[in-house]
Image (tube, rainbow, N blue to C red):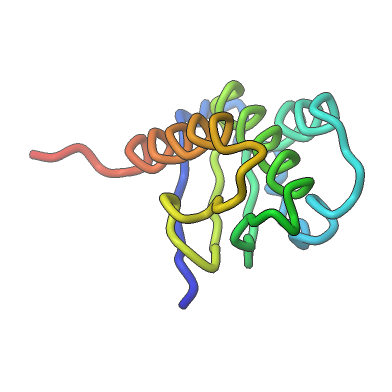
Length: 121
């Protein structure tokens, strides 16, 4: 099953002319990018659309680390993310090396989802 999440933050009208980036997941997470690279992406684009985010396990810990950097950059800049994943946020990471750090990432993803929900009347 594919889970779709609308993760969003405040989008200023001045960002309306900024392009939306929709990279292939592999091209964004499978290449050796550093945290500063994800900051540059978040600084340039109003948001991202990512499809097929895998579940992060011990076999792909390096991808989990890069994903955490990406989410930190988007969250800190107030950018939005529309994403599909093979599982929900709570079970997105089942590795061991980055468990403590990924808990924060999952929390940030949850906050981004909440910001994207319409206000309750």
